[in-house]
Image (cartoon, rainbow, N blue to C red):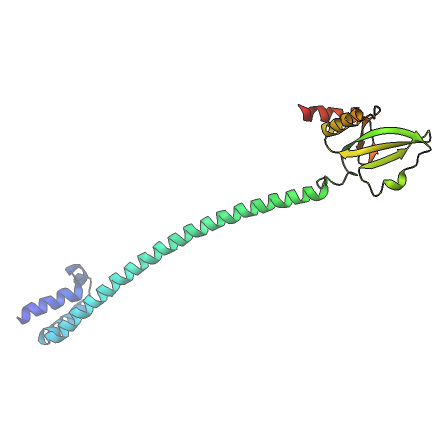
Length: 206
């Protein structure tokens, strides 16, 4: 019985002849002595075996935890990559928005109610001498006029961004008896020739 216990001790301690063969003579002698002590006291051997089993169980559990941590790190790395991609996309959108904002600051959109900017069309109803109606201009944005070199006052009614709306209004005025009603274009508050804006008007109609 003791011989069996002795061999079992040696097997547990060295886990194979290869490890045992690597020991020096002094180490072999010391471990043989320890094996004999375990053979004399099986309780100590039992404790050693149980301790070894506990250590192996703990080692297996730790390996499982390490594997789980590696998976967690991998998942977090994938999440970080996804977030970095989203951040890059948002930065790109922010850059585009800033560029659009800068463009708007350089060339702000025309306020449709600010007829002093851009091209507008008015319907002139006549040119008269000795008729000063300028006092009505400020309070009536749809009624305007301008003086000519000949001492006449040109009067206009209506302000339109769309040429064809102005043309429709001109026809209404003629139907009402204002036979001299015709369209005059203005650009940035200055009267211009119809040919200077006619190309854009025709293109819009098409």
